[in-house]
Length: 311
Image (tube, rainbow, N blue to C red; front, top):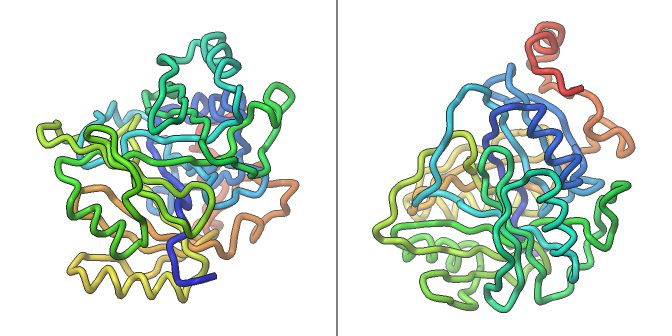
């Protein structure tokens, strides 16, 4: 692959109750739990990864369930809305399903010529199901209740809400290779042609907006995809040349990462495709067993005792 950003890799958010989060995303939304592990910096807290069968980059939504953290507030300096692609004709199914499961759901609407259905997860995280203009041929994860005709296909876009978009837009265009492709009012759509799906970033510019507070029900960071470690480190040099602070390369077991805070305040991550989620368990068993970073394996018994039960 070329030395490019390949759209979105994953998005990480903060939840409260681990079981409620697990049940909502696997049972109501029908995603696969592709990895059940713990927070690298807080091993008594889960780190859940949801996605398609393989946990393909561009489908992965992850959560830190920090019980008792308190409710966050959505505002400027945050990623404020996650967009999932769904098949044409599926929004009525989802509207009915959400109502049956007491999910807070908004009205079907249209944006950039695409129909979408907004809703909130149990912690108030803003998500929309979007029927994309371009065909999305990604293979979905099916459940007995959610088939390929209705299942989510992975990310369509992420929305960043910022007081001013100029410096963030420069990161997207000059470093990440995105183009400004459309505008509706104060919403600006950027996209990359390096990949077909999970390729869109919307910026909602709100000069008088109130800053968000990062806690339960908000997004923690947005990760962009690169093919491998060599490309990852090339982008590190580009970020440093913009006089932005960026971490050293970090091994997250399933990918290698860099983190930096973009000028608008959102925490960005760059993450590699390699080695993937089957590095420590077979595809058929993804998400079934608690996988620990090697530094915590000696404390497995204690960690398993304190983690909330999901069954």
